[in-house]
Length: 124
Image (tube, rainbow, N blue to C red; front, side, top):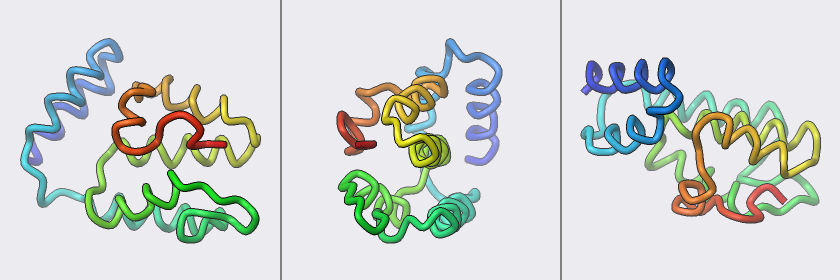
């Protein structure tokens, strides 16, 4: 699992045009082992450092972030790091376009985000 995952990660990093295929292929690799817990813990730590508690900040309700936060506990994936970075970009500017530009620039489409509950309006 680790070797196959690392091979797809290298493919993903080296060939941007192949990212969609690498992401689709990695979904068939069985989960388990690896550093999913480390990814989840780091993302949760980033959320805490930025004042994001249980998926929202005081005065800002965001259903996607709340659902995504719960997803981190059960099904963490490398794309979650990109989502966290995109959300931090949005927090820094307040502009939802910064969230979407970061996601798209790192190979995450609107359709993919909609499939995990992060579609239109998730960074508003």
